[in-house]
Length: 390
Image (cartoon, rainbow, N blue to C red):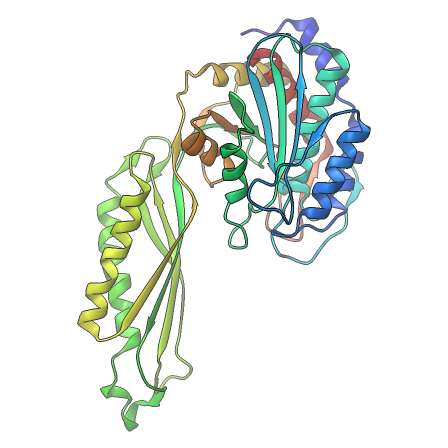
């Protein structure tokens, strides 16, 4: 759909930068490490209520911090576009909000309280202009997003409770492409142990089951499988893989240790069933344990499943129209390099989801930075996507 020039201009002009930044600063100003987003959820609910919106607070499986949900109707039958974001942040020292030289900083500014504020402002702009031609907006915000503290289950709860639209926009910090595909991710933890106490190599240590060599055998076996998986590829998303980035074991160079821990990742494409991927992981460990005389316990913590949506989906076309109306050009089709709640909406809910947010930096650090003009742009794109899609 091509958005009429006058309507596009009116919607863009209705985005109020001062109001948007005030909302973002209020959200960033409340610490909300994962599993502790109750206070910021309450504040967002208060902001929306003061704006005249009717707010729902579905628990969605996590009563300690109920989610926030708002519906806005055009009054005409049409599709529902959902704006969804997480209010929790990674567990790092809290940095209070500041706006200097056109840049918002502070904990969650980039990931993703600034983006949520932009989504709220998009909804306000549509309300103020009454230019949503049909359909509805559903805005949802929640906790339990960030690994390893959260498990994404509150999004599962929202989907299962029916808090879903016909399509979803998520304002994570990705704006260089329009991601229509992304790999799934599981965080792997493998613990190898033996009976007994740590012992000097010359006082019986060499006679103990060798924990470190067992770890090497695990790494070698997963390296073999990683080479096999590299043949399973997607032209945009890349290949399936195993990767290990952390090994912890031993106390001193001439002592036989009793424990070793490996941590890494497994990434897979949407053609692979998650239960099969998990079973493959489990099956590799016990033969090594038996051969080495050790115990091996593996944890397969799913972050999000893989996903893919059609590049010619009407939602993709509506988003491209909105983006082009705001920036003058379309985005290239690409892959999502990370995982987020969009994966879940596609795989669990069967709902097309596009991750698109501000050109922000410093996510998962204490130096989060997002240009104010980028938040304004995201609000404009979200509002116009609704005009085109709903």
